[in-house]
Amino acid sequence: MQTPVSLFTSEQSTSESPASKQFASGQPTSNPAVSGQAVTAAEQQAKTTESAVVKPVGQAPEVNIQTPIASAGFSAALSELAVKASTCRLCGLSEERTKVVFGVGNPEADLVFIGEAPGRDEDLQGEPFVGRAGQLLDRMLAAIGMDRDQIYIMNTIKCRPPNNRDPKADEVQACNLWFEQQLDLLQPKMICLLGRVAAQTVLKTDEPLGSLRGQWHDYQGIPVWVTYHPAYLLRSPGQKQKSWQDLQTVLASFQKLNQVT
Ligand code: URA
Image (cartoon, rainbow, N blue to C red; front, top):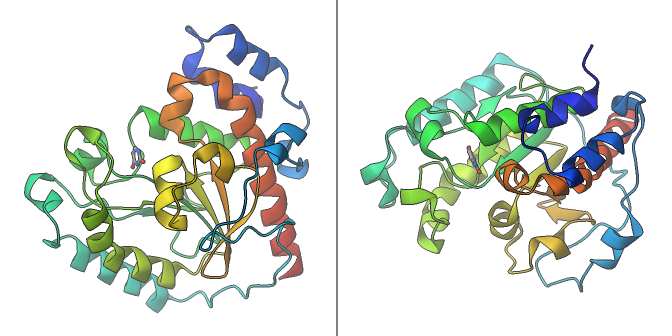
């Protein structure tokens, strides 16, 4: 039987660096779903001064956010929003896109993962994280005992930027119309931001990823954790260890949140 660790690392099984193998061998063998882990001292040191907009929450959040009442109307509203977004022409990206990539997963999920922008595979299929990075994301989720049906996945913008360049400010601004309404409907209890672009966009900061990791942030009252983008982990498998610790932090805090609800 595969352990959570092997699920998380199997993609690179033929080309893994020694650092990645070290990561695999360094993982806990207990069920990660019940073994939350604090961030390391090195990560704590990476913390930087709080900016005006980014408001770190020092401790794992203990707020008691009420679960939205599950109803067909609730997910119908999300579907309705997706239909409206599917014909969006608010920015230039609409001219080259194949499909608007709205979001996927459980509309009543308490945990939302947010990536940067659709890539080529996502643009073709209309679903976030379906390429190689998405496959790694699936293994990362499996490693913490979750799958796409339990969470919701979306991006900061809904259309693919040409050649996978970073989204421009005016594109983010235009897409905010959909982004904010989507999160309003989802009302997650926790958000996990994947990568620098998502982190800087959602938290409205220029701080580097290394500074944003390792501390809680706040998005409109929702606790936010920042971790590496799976595409970056594919290029730098040695960072999977830190990513694993991030997921442990998210999971432990998420379980704590649900206990007090
Ligand atoms: N990278 C992202 O940030 N989002 C996707 O949907 C796919 C790749």
